[in-house]
Length: 127
Image 1 (tube, helix red, strand yellow):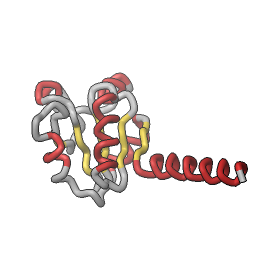
Image 2 (tube, helix red, strand yellow):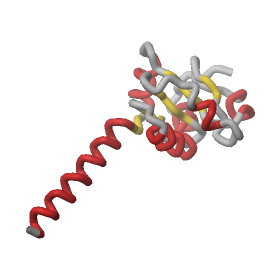
Image 3 (cartoon, rainbow, N blue to C red):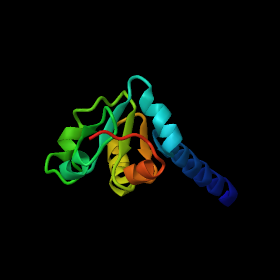
């Protein structure tokens, strides 16, 4: 009996982590670049306006993580379309990814190392 209960708990945990991985994917620059080059992806920068004005990814929209209306702005996004998130180094975008998951978004991509890593890798930004 204990073995059966242990097996059920292990299965439930494995399925929940699998579901998590299916909704949120933390990806590196090359994969992110391919993703945002395709159709139907919502590119979201969660830095401040000051950070955004210094340079951002082409086609991105700014939704300031520290804004009082942050959650309301996120809710204006299409939950059915993939969301590609980034911030300065990955902290704010990671927190945003979990929030989007809780809000019912289907597929979320988070840029590992943020725009700092993107720039260090020689990738294009616009001002």
